[in-house]
Amino acid sequence: MPGLTVVGSVAFDSVRTPFGERERMLGGSATHFSLAASFFTPVNLVGVVGDDFDPDYDELLQQRGIDTRGLERIAGGKTFFWRGHYDYDLNTAHTDTTELNVFANFDPQLGETAREAPVVFLANIQPQLQRRVRAQCTGARLAALDSMNLWIETERDELLRAIAEVDVVFMNDAELRMLTRQPNLLLAARDLIARGPRAVVAKLGEYGASLYTSEGFFSLPAYPLETVVDPTGAGDSFAGGFLGYLAGSGADASDEGELRRAMTYGSVLASFNVERFGCERVLELTREEIDERFEEFRRMTAIEALPAGEGSHA
Ligand code: AMP
Image 1 (cartoon, rainbow, N blue to C red):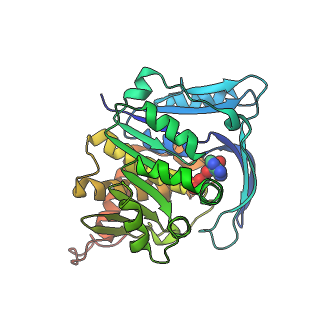
Image 2 (cartoon, rainbow, N blue to C red):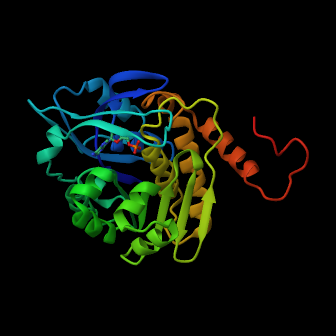
Image 3 (tube, rainbow, N blue to C red):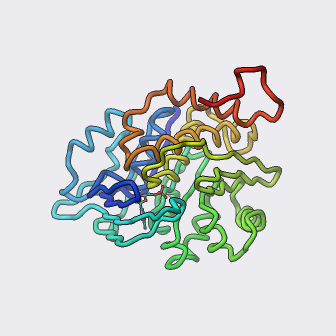
C-alpha cells in the first residue's frame, strides 16, 4: 500500500517580499510538503492546529487526498504563526516572529495508516517531535528530514540524533554549513552521511539543488523563471515532489536513477511554488503542468545538443 506520512508545522504565515505581502495565509512546512506530495501519493498529515484554524482549510487538504485524521485541533489553542520577509536576495528568509503556540505541547499519537506508511517525512519542526514521529513509523522503508537555523541554534544535539535516524536529509547550503561547521558542502554532506543517512540534498535556492550520496553526486539548476514572487515553502515543495515521487514509484534511497528523477520532480514542484504567494500556485497546479516541466528539465540539462527545436525552453 503506497503512501507517505509527514509531521511538521501547519501554520499561518505573514510574508513580505519585494513584490507584495500577505497576512495569515495558510502555510507551514507540513502543509507545503503535503500539497506537493499529493500529486503522487496519498498523504497522512500529522500536526496540530488551534480552533482559529478554519475548517475550510481542512476540507481543502482532504480534497487533495491528504488524510487529516492526524491533524489534532486544540480547543482554545492558537495555530503556529510565522512572520518573515525577504529582500531582493530571495534565497534568504528573515524571520521576524515565530510563535509555536499549540506545537509547544504537542504529543503526536499516530493512527495505524500513518504508522504503516512506507515513507515518512519529518518536516521542519522541533527535533524532539520529529524523533517521536519517526519512532512510531515502524513500517517506513524510507525516512527523511528537513530543519532550519532556529533548531540548529537551539537544539543541535537533538537534531543530530534525529538525523542519525533517517535515510535522506534536506537542508539549504547555509544550514548545512552551520550544522556541520564545515565551509565546504561536500565535506558537510560527508559529515552527515557518516552519521547514518544515505543521501543529503543541498537546496541552493535560485541555483538549484545537489544530491550527495556515498556513491555519487548529482546536481540540477533551478528552473529559470522570470517571475519569482514568494520563496516561502519552496524547500518543502521540493521535498514533497521528491518524496512523493519515491513513495508513488516504490523506490528506496539506494536507486540512483530514481533519486535523480526525484530530484527533478522536487525542482519542478519548488519552481511552481515560488511563482505566487504561499500555496496559491500549487493549489491550482495540474499533473500535466508538472509532467511538461519535468520534460523541460530533461531538455535543459542534456549535455549533447538535441535536434533543432527540442533544446529550447519555452
Ligand atoms: P521553507 O520551505 O523552508 O520556505 O519553509 C516555509 C515554512 O516553514 C513556512 O510556511 C513556515 O510556516 C514554516 N516555518 C517557519 N519557521 C518554522 C519553524 N521554526 N518550525 C517549523 N516551521 C517553520
